[in-house]
Length: 624
Picture (cartoon, rainbow, N blue to C red):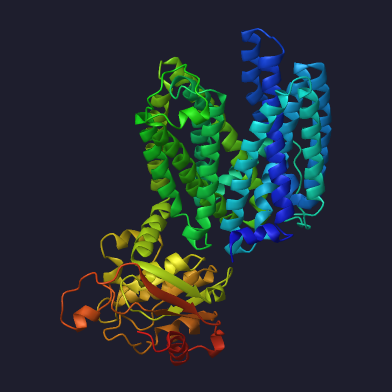
């Protein structure tokens, strides 16, 4: 089922339109205000510069002051009711904005900008913590992709509309006022249709001190190492995007030689690229939270940011070409493709990170983790502004700033992926599996989302653990023969995935006993453990007898057992078919079709080696 089907479901669509309309209004109001202050009030340049630099600071300030409080609200109270109060607050703010537009009262408009920052701050933790309550785990990536795409497009359209409304001769302030108030009312009406989202921590003791609570929220965000580094990755995305977007007006004028329509074109390309990249995440990840896309996104950001430095269209700075004339200039398409691809890889980068945080953080703390994420985002956005200003003061031109940002992105990515090797492990797994195979899956929902379980599967090739790792949504601990565990390159994947090496009793009895202890400890912690009970890779394509080790595991720790079966793997380079036929093992099939099917869980009191072998054989059928 396509991710777009969510737009027809009440549990998602009203929320989607509520947040999209809010993003539109934020940007429509801000750009209308900038047009009024910068071009229609006749203010001196210094005063205009003061207001335009003060505006982003006022909008971001509430994130520092109120994010921690917003996180508490989103967990202690029912979320839909808070959303409706936030939308009523937006209507009131836009009413005040209308007064500011008509009276040309800049200070009042700056107050409204601060209020809209409060609106976004309170809505932020709800925006991402409500999705896991409304969506199935398999819908998280698609839901986040739609939210990211909708937000980007709404922001872009809001910027264009806000600018355009103020240009209507004689009626600009009226048009801007009516539009922003009307959109705020539409957002409130959409919010009325959002289904109830119960409080996840109703007994939470509320802390009204924003400073101590901010510190507390940051400590909560830091508790899970992988989640915290995902938050750092998201915040770096905002740093990177802020630096890039802040330079676009100057880049348009002094490098592309374009007018305002060209600036709108490059913003459109960036936003559309982000939307397309976000939507592609679901297909590339097969509806699972696939953090292996994050390194690919980071790599793409660097490649196209660096290429943007070398992409110099044959224009003359100050020419003020319109967008239609610009697209005909030699070299223009290279810059346009770079900007689009930066947006696309930004989507690959950030959507899996948000889905990862939502799936990994405890439900009763997720809103506060998102609040902590917003605080760190705000810090990085401020740092990005300082970074851009600092490089400009040092005499760097805009293409050089793009180059430096792309190179710094390499260092940040390496730092994050070194701290959390799981990202690179998932990337290596994703590339290997998707290069070699087209995997069709069925019945994998039988692997429980929570609680301990044992997974058993037939063993056909060296790639079997990677295929299961790339296909099953829930992380699993694999028990594997120690010689496979030590295969170069794959060893990095297996170690990072915390696989459990095992040896035969006659090879290394101590290693075997240690493996059984680790399996029991993992099941006791509520993890999923996967074993290949045949004890080795098949040499003839058939299923070998399941060994009694599985009975020993279940006797000590009775947990449900989920049977899986691989089909179509026999004959691949990583199987033993060529060895059995006494011929050279060569890559004979690339991107071949294989299947992974799952059966209903078998209760521990009914499971034994013979029963499970029969279940796996039945699932595999006659296929080799």
